[in-house]
Length: 458
Image (cartoon, rainbow, N blue to C red):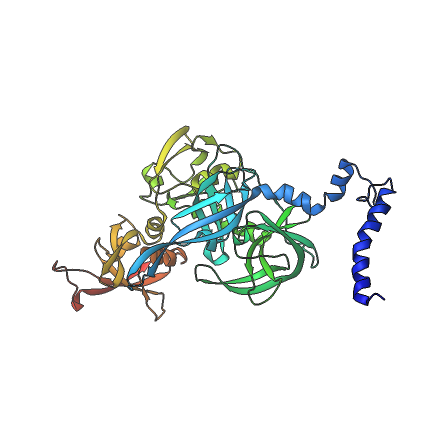
């Protein structure tokens, strides 16, 4: 009698033979399922072409991979300070066909020495050099610009004002350097507040964020969150590291607000020209700062700007965008109507920090340091202005400032800190300034060479 193990072995040996014999007796293809319907290629594609596929087809070409290179000081094994490069990667999305891209500030901001942009390599293998145009650090938003010999694909912008919890959304970006990755999910919540730590070590506090369970990982920052119509409804910005399936995006309505009020406004340019226009009207000049580049070119209030850089102004972007990307020291041509006829003027912009302090305080300053002590020193004083009224002179060191009646003094450590403070003050605000002046010319500052004065912000 065969044992159970022998019977099992015999069955395993015979079964394939029986199966092969049965297949040989059948005229049907054994690889085809009897109840599986046959589809033409057109029918198959129609069934597979889901709304998600359509969204990626529409929006994918406008999503970019971004790398920013930043200097980093580290210690080697001998505890010596060495300079290294820290590469931060993220995503962005094209908003204007001329090459303007919106992304997160923490991806491209700070002290980045080089920014590069890539599209889907299958569509465009070019690595583009990008310029940081403008940013609002507190909103974690920035605009960068690339140049090319073509118009770039643009994503369609929707609204975040009518989002539904449970609504289907897709996130497109470059998580962990995996270019053009797509994740799908739903809107899990609205009006969320969140504080996150960025890759460059800063803490950012956000309000009114969109929460989604679509996967948002490091590298997705700056990419679009899209609804099922392919419209951008948010900019992906953060993932909660303590929870699963919790990503967050800045609502597109907030992004639009920051874009139009700050990021795409000429006031965000690094170059300062010293005049303002009525952009809601006929681009009539409403202000010219005395002794500014605009004043030196002969511009006056009431002049009307007709063209910028040789292009006639047909819509606001024709005025805003050429000025937005202007660099300090770079000349630009304007055609103006001064009432008595048209004429061309050329303006050469100043550094914006100099422009703000000159416009508001009537002076420019330069960095000044003795050892580890840092301050600012007056460089230029306007012929007429607050600094001249106070009696400031080139070479005066501005040690500290008190705003109005405040007791606390602000130590002025850099040109940027002075410009930031001055730019945010209302006209007429009084600043009490501690001034160090080398009266006797011995290149030393004594106690009796400390002066105080009050300056009125204009």
